[in-house]
Length: 107
Image (tube, rainbow, N blue to C red; front, top):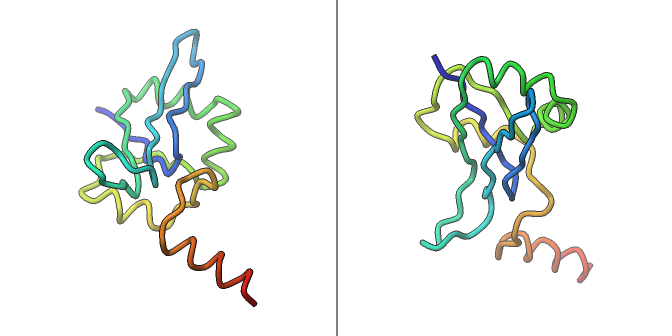
């Protein structure tokens, strides 16, 4: 059985888990080669690796803040899971977010 980590982080994050490097994929809100901007990214992990990762203090902080979420099954739609998660402040700006910032400075 596997578990899945849904991430809204803009970049990959590596964690030391029992002496091994575990990478949680990022890229949410970042335009890729195909000019597609993913709203969330899923990383599959073995149960024992995921259980140990959840004990990592850095990962636990990210989970508490809502940037990552551990799932027991692969979501049919990443967007459905990611919509309720926190946005990474380092993600790329979009026309929508830039418009909001411009409206604030014009006021």
